[in-house]
Image (tube, rainbow, N blue to C red):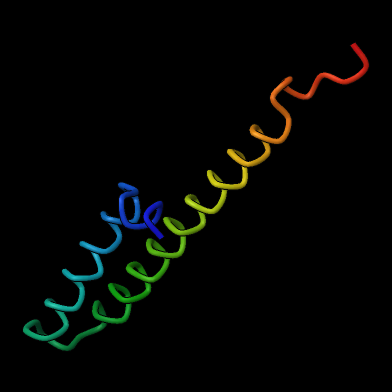
Length: 72
């Protein structure tokens, strides 16, 4: 859980989501509101995906410290 909370991409996406929520509450209701929500959702999904990919790559590096060299 800590890897998500302290990741810069996730923090940035959360701030963007907060801004979207505030804009939806006080701003005008027009065609831009759904686009803001779509943008916030995609940003958050990409940030979580990046953290998952980093975690997967780190676990692969730990399980294979030789850098993928076999038979040497």
